[in-house]
Length: 347
Image 1 (cartoon, one colour):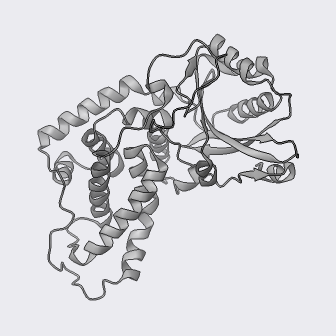
Image 2 (cartoon, rainbow, N blue to C red; image 1 turned 90 degrees about the vertical axis):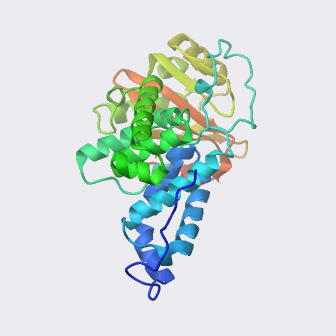
Image 3 (cartoon, rainbow, N blue to C red; image 1 turned 180 degrees about the vertical axis):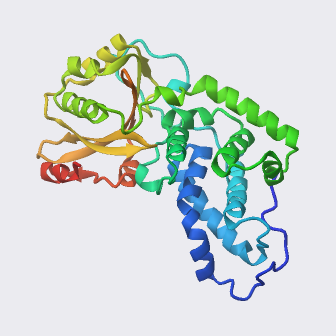
């Protein structure tokens, strides 16, 4: 059920002076957080970008009728929620391979690719914007944007996602969420309870995830990059936890367990060392790498973006998003580069 975006009338400001410059000045500061909200709802950075554009177009068209009974931020979230819920009615949920079925036990079999599946996408940190000032809010934000939680959110019905995110994003009360979504207070509380229970079952607890400033984190990532570029399977495998998961959408196969991860990398690293270069980046407030393969002429071509989940005992999850040149561009990375150009991208 669609929710009203404005309540008619000229409001306390009237229509005079409500020009495009004023709208842009007042609404633009919320663009990054609305993008993150739409991404959490949809699981696709590309879809989220398109929907944020639609949100701003709809908001501009309705701006003269905005009465300011609620804040402009809350009003924009109302429009964004409507837009996302409408989009979800006409799309399939975004997934990762590990959310589709059982793990594969044959890493030596060449991967098949499924372009028909709507795969989950990572969100480059460069598109997220600034973090909150409160340290506790920073930790909560990192936990709320991590890739495993975004994947788990996609298993919730659209309205459950909206209820959960409106509570967490805007700290809305039950009554406010009920008004936003045209629900009863009892329905909101029930949806919130079911959503949290479902996420607890699907997503790892935030305390199991290593924070960016954990001691040894940088050293672990440096060892990972060195082992990967050297095609050193033994050194690479030692960095993963016993129950680690490795997946490479759009390939639906995924692998779990130390022994299976070792077999996977042993099969993949058939080329000589020095053919791959990793460039550090970040996504979903997690460490990530852009992977480049050296061509015969000595230049390097982008292959995929790897997003890693670190725990206290090592790397617990590695997701490589392959075959997506637009995604590489969203990370601000070149599609091709010389070795010297890749060196300059290193921190």
